[in-house]
Length: 232
Image 1 (cartoon, one colour):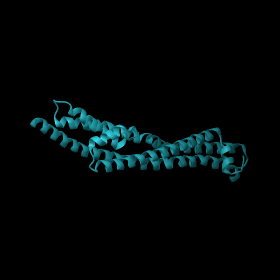
Image 2 (cartoon, rainbow, N blue to C red):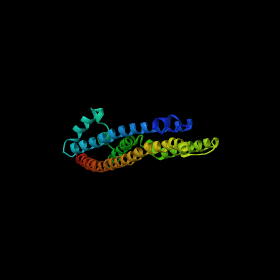
Image 3 (tube, one colour):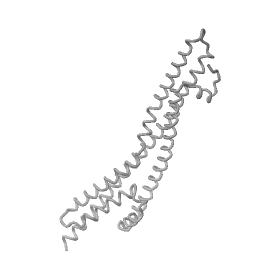
Image 4 (cartoon, rainbow, N blue to C red):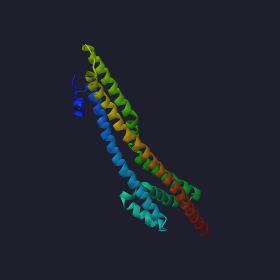
């Protein structure tokens, strides 16, 4: 048995099963880091877009002008701006109906915004389940590789007259690498999942709050329009 305890030698001398476990964990780690980086950019952009939209929305500008600006720019039809766009579009369509109350108009707009919000949250949560899966399963995959490697190491001792630490150490060391790789893949995935799930939750609360506030504005507009129609 090779007594060289260098990392590369231990990996190359590992059994096929342990090497397969290491390869799976390496692939999971690379994939999870790709998701972590992509999700970091997405959530940062979503947060900044929500900040910019709220600043523009509450600045007192004309809602119709804001709606036209959003509809003319496909890149802005996401997040809070997309929720506003879908709700205001449905509000304008329902106002054309002559036999519909202001409550029905607002409720229709609210349903349209809810659909847009659910789609946005689903977009933000995409691949988060993958991070959770990597974080929860990688340690067990690594542990399987470790158990298998240690089992093979002890089985090989059956062919020698006397067991020494020099004979056992390389086999155990190469097996423990699988556990280390499992933790290396799991820890960043778990940290990222918890952080990003919290950020998505905070954005969802902001979307819900905006929907309620915007619905109140639409309610006042619908009530005024009905009063004008009844007076005329």
